[in-house]
Amino acid sequence: MGFRGVGVVAGVLALGIGVGLSACTSSSSADAGRDWCVPLLTVSPGTVQPGDTVTLRSADRCDAPVPDGGWHVVATVPQADGPEVAVRSAESFDGSWSASVTLPRDFPVGDAVFGIDDWDSAPCSDTSGSCAAAFGSFTVRAAD
Image (cartoon, rainbow, N blue to C red):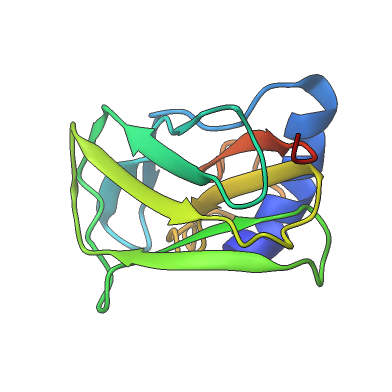
């Protein structure tokens, strides 16, 4: 399941309680034979206007393999067909990972999420409560 599916559900939950969901927790799968963590991601600034730049950061070290073509990092609103702004990052989670996007001037006002769309949660079952999504939340307010 990609960021859009996980992000929409988890983003709504996170935005509803005012906290972004993410954590650097170890995950393992006997089927996949690998261990990795989900990095704690922070979005800054937490409140922006359309046209501003937002940055997603992680100070965690996570042994997650970078996918071919890099991470697909997406800022979007928590609705199925909402607009999105994306960038690719080939950086590994070495303790200083970051990615930035500039929101278009017509980006919607309200709650938004910024995260990694192609985070590999394949070993996680749909019924597992331990599958964290790699994203954070921010708010877009109307221009002054």
